[in-house]
Length: 252
Image (cartoon, rainbow, N blue to C red; front, side, top):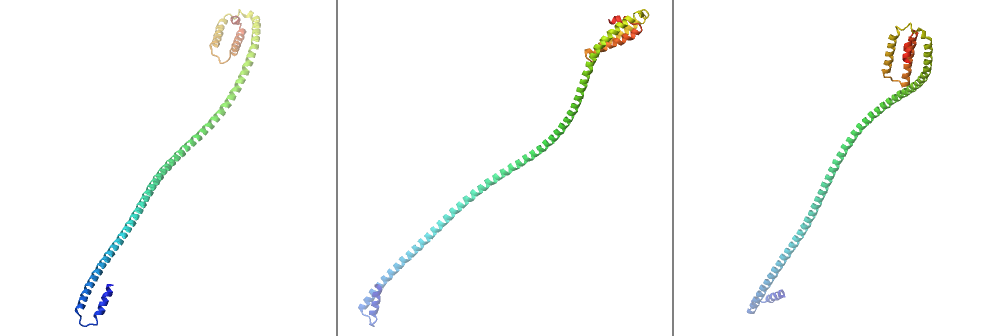
């Protein structure tokens, strides 16, 4: 509205070439009004400028706050990423430690397998040696069985021979006594002719008989008795040919 008043004053002032006092007063009032208008415009401009400055400052603050928020979010994301990275690093460290332990266990298991294989080879060698020794023992057992069978056969044969000797010894005793009786009856008349030689030969015969009694015999008592009787018979028969009647009496 003030602008309208200013324009009206300008239009009113144009027709007169020589302004009057009233016009001068109007001009002064208009000039004062213009001054106030300019002052108001300046004040409004200052207010607008302050408003723009404040608005700009607020925008800058908002931008700064937004940037700070973004930086905070970025920092938080970085912290989360760093935490995740550290967690992954810890997981990788644990996994690496587990892998190292597993590798150590595998190495230990491999060494155990090697030791078992070595012991198995030693055991196999020992088994082969044991089998060889067992085969040797079996061969020796077979030989011993053969020898044992031979010994049993010999023992059986010896038992048969001993039995036959015992039987023969009984028949020999009867024959011996019969022949001795016959010799006693037939050679009584030759007693006087051989008296000089009988004592010596009787002594020799007695010594031989004593020697036979003292010797340890591997035969049974029946066989030993048979041998003694047989020796007595042959000695008596030999002496009887030469008139050994005294020896026959001594044996009786």
